[in-house]
Length: 94
Image (tube, rainbow, N blue to C red; front, top):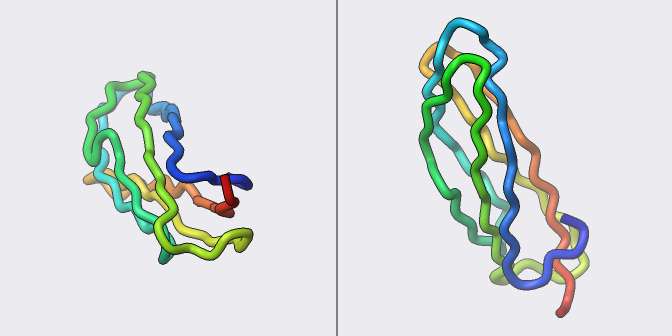
C-alpha cells in the first residue's frame, strides 16, 4: 500500500492447489512498528482445489508519514506448507 490513509481493509483470495487433500492453515501476522491490524480469520480449512477469501485490516498508529515499512502474513499448515505474503506500507496524510 503506497498511500495508506488511516485504516484500510484488504481482501485476498488463496487457492488450495492440491486436488486430493484439504489443509488447515494458521496465520502469523507481523506488522511493522507504528501499525495495528487484524485478520477476518486466524485459522481456516480449505478443501482440495478450493478457494478461500480473507481480509486484513491495517491502521496506522504512530508510523512516520511517507516512510516505507515492511511486515508479513504467513499461513502455515500442519503438514509444513507455508505461504508468506509480504506487506509493504507507506502511510500518508489524509
